[in-house]
Image (cartoon, rainbow, N blue to C red; front, side, top):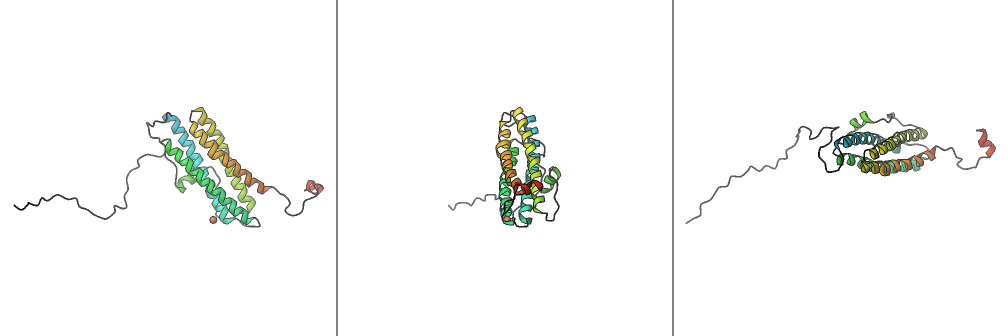
Length: 206
Ligand SMILES: [Fe+2]
């Protein structure tokens, strides 16, 4: 006897991707997910993620200030500063990622987009146009100073609250690289003779 064909209901298969989708947020900015096995209470993680987001906004702004300086630098030190600014930019890119991922790890939500960063940062907004090298470097140093001050405060508070991971990140991965970059920048604002040494008397008079 011929076998009877059984018809299996089949889902409609469609190769069309489901694009233009939107839905409500999974987690609101400024909150932390509740029960994480980190042995850190929710209020601690709330305070730390809030502070880390401030540090993130300032670090993203400094990162972009380095790229602006890298592109717009002019003058006899163009080559060395063009390279130095980009090296520091690359280091700040890594710092941004470390801070953002620490926030997520603590159950928070990281700032990400330029408009949100612009609303949050404490670093002064530079003009769109080009500025002289000493002004570029001064702006970068001012930005570093804001970040370094905040790092010292935040590292102390993290220790106080028992968040050693945040303390370690802030000191080792943010504070120390920022201090090093400050040294490299500030040496460019020392008025040192380029070709001929000055007589001590002439130096005193100026
Ligand atoms: Fe470049």
